Image 1 (spheres, rainbow, N blue to C red):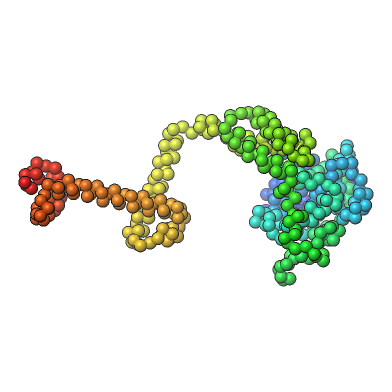
Image 2: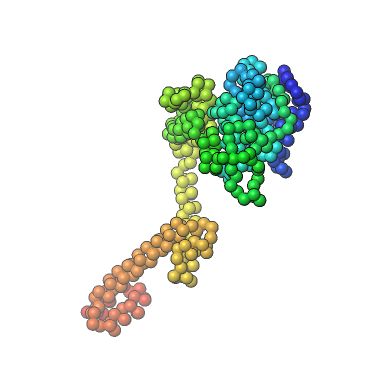
Length: 398
């Protein structure tokens, strides 16, 4: 049963739930949770349900509120004081082996959406995380997606501090300094006295990007995608194939990953790939020839309609450039689309002119070149009434 030391379960649960608040849409928020770090019921769930699982996602996909560190050894809390590290808000311990997760809360969340990934606050948070990870001697390859749930009965939770941290307060305990070069009116955070510029922070930030695990994951997942597209295999066969690939890649890693890490990476890649990518044979079976023909006909009609619109515009504005046409006609008329349509219109016009010239030559070829009256008669009378090629034309011009 969960043992809460220094706080109550209800208070901790209230604090944890409030950290996931993202505004009016919080009632629709889902976070990842699981029975273990593998694929056993590992999925997104509504917050109240997710908090009943042993492993949860510590932060939403919208902001960074908790800095969580993984200590894969029998951890003694006295180590925090020995290394002069900031005290975590609480420590979640596995009573079976002493492995722990250290949770540090931020009093102001850092936006972590894609558009904010390279923002100064996010870079600052990464710098603080990596420096603190080094000071605590925690696992630098911890992916921070699933952590021990501090309110679950499987773990022992020890509360050490109620107040949340500023990033600058955490940085003051670490071997990192910072220069905020933005104007004072635009600063979003205060920092300790600094000797390191933004360019120097690169050595601290990006703990994920160059890690051994992430490089192995990125290399193997693309191989698995290709294998899945070209092979109609079962899920188990794909997992086994991916695991063999990860083991082969891991043989060249220094230091290498253990069996558990290899298995987790391989299973994560294979399960997602099998669920989200269809092999070629399955795709061919999904669509018959009639479907392809109908789809082609729809695309051809849309293309013909666009050509017609461009012709109409060119008739009124013959000197318009392709870029101008694209800008005026708007959505669906990209520059490439207009370029192709204009070339098609020019080719059709040329073909029509050549056909007309050939038809005229066929009739006019038997008319003396010095007889403009006969030529005019053929063009204006004979051709107009559809007598081309009739015997009377030849006798007329002889």
